[in-house]
Image (cartoon, rainbow, N blue to C red; front, side, top):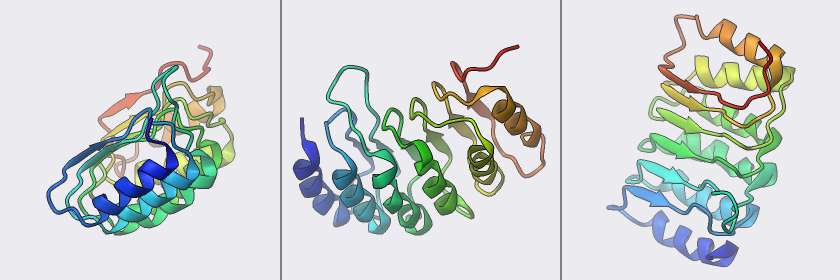
Length: 179
């Protein structure tokens, strides 16, 4: 387990790396402090194309939470190489707002995995999902395991038919919808 202190050291190295392409820090027991350091470093990094800070069940869970997501916005606005992000299982909840704010106009992010983050199905969530899908180049979105419910799912499926949506793969298992 690396924890917040270890992530801070890794973030310092990532900030100045010119050859690192993929960074997998999944299930390393770090929280919002480590997340902040990492996202700040990735905002200026010009080589990393994919990051995985997800949490696997039962193993040193990362808990970036909504508090740690505030630095995702500048990372998404400034990083021009990152194309794959896996934030699954980090209890980001309302931190989805920071992703939506940062991803508007981003043309490099192609895959976003935000499953199992306790994201609730409500009008705000629907607004953020709409921004993510209609104002970016996302072609793959994983929202599995979030209790979105029927109304949020129906709303999201409604704007997926827009010509602006470039989504090709939607992973939405276990989102609490009733047929």
